[in-house]
Amino acid sequence: MVLKGRYKLLFNGVDLMQWIDGITAIERNIGQNRSATLMKVGRQRGETFSYLTNSAGTITVSALVVDPVNRRSLADAISTDVPMQLIFGDEPDKYYTAIADQQAAAAEAYHNNVVTLYFTVPDNVAHAVTARTFTGAAGAPINVTYNGTAPSYPILTQTITGDNGLVGWVNSNGALLQFGDPESVDGEELTKSDRAIRWDMRSQPADAQINTNCVTPYKLNVNSKEPNQFTGTVEFGYNANKKETGGENTHQSYGTGAKVWHGPGMHGDVAPNSNDEATGDFLFRSRFEFTPDAKGYGRMEFTMESGGTSIATGVLRDSTYTNTAKVFEWWVNGHSANSVTLDKKKFKGNFLEMQITRQVDVLTFKVSDIKNLSGDTVSTTYGTYSTSMTVDGFDEVPIDGVTVCAWAYDTGKAATMYWTDLKFDWVNVEYWHDIPNQFEEGDEVVADVGARKLYVNGVESGLYTIGNQWKEFAITEDCIIEPVVSSWATPGTAKVEVREAYL
Image (cartoon, rainbow, N blue to C red):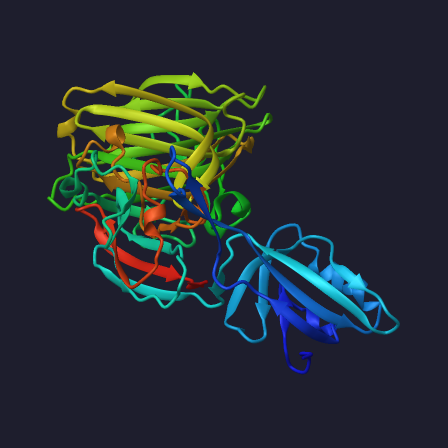
């Protein structure tokens, strides 16, 4: 019998029937290519079964090609470097992962060429074209039904709501996958973390005050007879740095000034945490662009306030016309504590993050030159400089405001300066010592069981994969798969994607 008409033979998304005039035979294996290994023991009669292996399979297609020219187009269509989907018209809902193998044989006759195509199927099973998805909430069992006849390896996805230290999966066979560190996380205390300020700079934040109600800046030029001045404007939504930040930012104009630092500032009030305390541990972060100019000055300040006075200030400045040095300095209670010129070999970029933290009475200043971001977190840096100090009584000082400033000097040219985002968090755990929050709001964590790989927001991660029971998560029948999160975390959404497999 010759198959033609509406019959389809798809490989790599291309219908090969456009070059084939008829199919005379298709040889597909029944079941997998199984091979038993036996062992001879002593003088026993026969042999003892040891184990069974499944080998790759072969699919053979015999076809007629009337026009010899078509064989070249056919050869090009089946020549791939890796296995692709192979779909037959009698089972359009299933595909084989196959690669054209061996030399395609052609018995040529005038306008009647018999062509034999050989396809190797590494896993020797067919797969459903359309995957089935089962959804639920993280922490609740998900019932999975299965109609296949061969093992299938699911794709497991959790979307995180709030902070979370552990993503895991347990199935009805007792197998476990887990990613994160369940031992070091104190869930109850982490749930008390509060975000007091979050500015994304796409538009002027409703709680931001421009050039008003700010801390009066201390006089930085001791020879000046006038205090430094708030002048100029802030433009929100400016996106010249979009390729680095993935979002909008600000752009400053600095106004005018004579022999003083001058420029715009933004102030935000910091509300107490959920326990109505303003003396707890905090984490302040702001990312910004700072490009020194050999012919100009620039100074960006990040100040934690208490009662209208400066309590802790981190500064990045360029205050020389002779080079493009980045100087990092830190101030405590309105007085300069120290400064350092950052190593240009480590701080070679211009997109940075300033961090100021308090843990009990330990104050830490940190500046990082950002190389890559992963979601909302700095994943890699060119360089980082951090310094910590113990300030007696600092844990009793309330923090009620934040001010950031971008300043030029005198009438000269200004360095390039703008902010991309700013956050102030109250933190009631030793967040910076044990790193309890492995995953953040909105993270998508995907475990590809078949590939034995983990992806966080689309990026492959090797996080805590040693010892995971990947093989035991193969699905052969109806089962239950339960997503797991930290005990203190807010459950997010979860889904199990299954592509049924057939012998």
